[in-house]
Length: 306
Image (cartoon, one colour):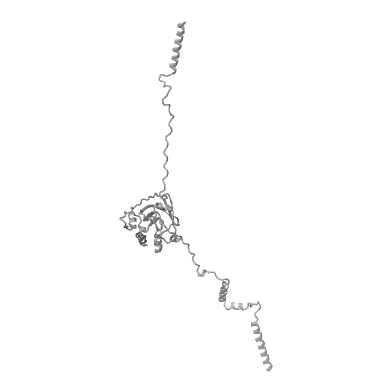
């Protein structure tokens, strides 16, 4: 009996082990995983598309670092700054230099700098003159207008690039200080806009700066309103022959012409017209009757004596 139970248990044990081996593969992974399987990786992020470039003409990049460096000061002595030398060194300002010399505004600038006065010059380039003014425009200006044009490009104080935003409009220039020469300056970041009422210009670079004189390059000629404002066209005066004639003059003239053309016949027609009172004129008829009566009387007297 004991042997029978042992055999049955052994058979069941072998059968159980065979089923286990058939279900579990030979190289099955262990139930405890050190690193659970990770989720599939997402697509790598795409690089942002580059933004469109900013138009440099509308917002030019400005720097306070001047193109021409100021020379070092030697002691207390100060040599006046050579404005034309700075502009010639940079290049592209020959028209502006020629106007400064011909109008003698350059002498005024040098005298003010020698007297330790501070100035700011807004210098337009040759390209600015070509794009702003029509050919021959400068030749049509009088000497006084050219002087005002050059003085309009000079401000009577030193203004650094950072101080433009502190200015109050209208900005004072060395041109005639009147309503005809306004200038408004506005800033936005590094962008400095100059409005004259005729054109809008921008500062494109710092040419020179030494705490007494600042020279900035502008992309337009600053046209003052008092010189370049459009003038109203004058209407031509009417010719004397076209002047309106008073009433009745045409009738008088036509009457005189008809009188001249018709001659005596026209006069006879006028004699037959009534007078101003409206009654006929019997003067001529009465005279004829009187003459006839006298003639008959004379004839009758002669016949009697005969």
